[in-house]
Image (cartoon, rainbow, N blue to C red; front, side, top):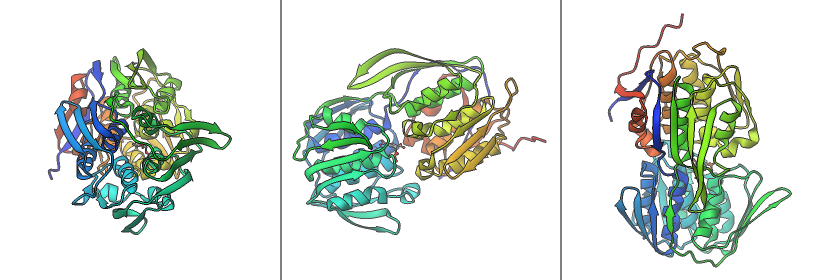
Length: 451
Ligand code: S3P
């Protein structure tokens, strides 16, 4: 391993039209559902990030034919079920990958051992193991439900499972297990989370009933269903598009358009929040592609104002709070993000790392167990000093967020472990450079003297 870092520094305005990489959530699901289906599924626009490539390899290990036929083009030969893998399944950094694959695998008479990198081995798997256990799956794992773990599937029965935390990963694991459970499965979610699994199951010909009732959203998957192969066009990932869009908002003179971005209402809480902060954002050319709304989103440099983000919006922007915190650093006044405790169990403790990184860059922050507050400067002042080397704990979104900060701060900002950016956004540096950003490999900058 090299100790290379990436450093971002202020340059001219950002300008241009780009395409965000394929949506990570939809890419994982395309591979998994394709492997569970009967026949050949063709995928276009698949995110070729490290996380998704791990899922592709895992699907091959479980017996599917998986072939890359061109850039972003993949063919999955589904065998209608999983067979026992010959070796340990290593999901790398991917929480979505491992949790969804465990759900899918639980439906079959097999034993499979899962592991991941140091970050993934530290993340809680109990949230998935609990409902899978209620359905009849068994496992052996490290204390606290951590990886590596060996899962034993097969003989599953119906569950009606109320999600204790808003998690699309847990919902999806239960639904995928339900495909091969006697009587199917039902998930009740008190707060709506991203619904790609439900939508895509329908795309593969399954019946999924969704009804809103007093205490939440009931997702009912009847048992005994057979998935039929299909074609999937993966839309642009709003969680990746967020980085060039916010970079344009905070860099004077900028105008950036991201084409073909997914506009699913359960994914675009960030656009609503930035709009409330006074961001000049326009959405054009809205169209339907593969059962999802997509559009072209343009951001122009804006004078932002701090806001209170409603906690109920958290599931629709849970991965975007790090980059929102960067926008907030350049906004006038306080931005208060409440009800974001789930941020602490992502690829890193994102509340702690954003608070530490922003503070190191001279931004006022207040950290509480479930809240992050960013204190922006007065309008018209140059609010962000920068000049820090930021520790990312190998978290791609912490790295990209601080690089965006460095594009508009007084002194350059550098991040460690930049290779991890490739888990979700392999072309990030090139795409940003193409817009005019100065981001380069470097040694850590000196801390600025802030007197
Ligand atoms: C995802 C769900 C979210 C999100 C993750 C992707 C998914 O996680 O943070 O990046 O594809 O289902 P949780 O289910 O833990 O909220």
